[in-house]
Image (cartoon, rainbow, N blue to C red; front, side):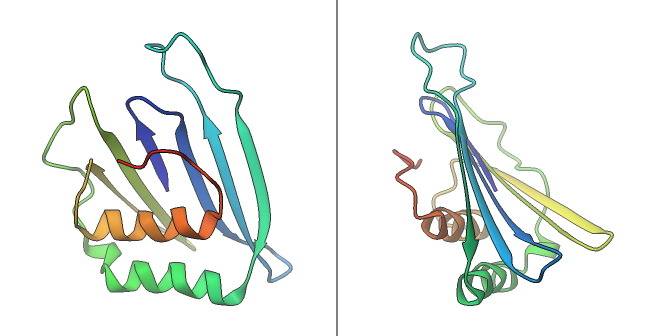
Length: 126
């Protein structure tokens, strides 16, 4: 999942199944906004996720019927808000869904689970 925020660093969170069978949760923040004078240093945290945490994330995809979601958001965006991008790949199957500042929909629900599972203080979420 990626969260591109207008006024805060971008957040990227990825759940990965390692060859060892362990689950890894990667959380990165990157300040790529040229409109700000100060830029935060990028951060990257990788930790083992429990089977329960991985199941919670995978269940969020299932509840959202993710593979059937429309990929592109009909709304183009705006000057104040955020793009929420959810991507998934299982084997050769790939799908993504992008939404602009979603308030209550499947993309936001999946994204919220990623944000919660990261365990990081990521600042304002919008």
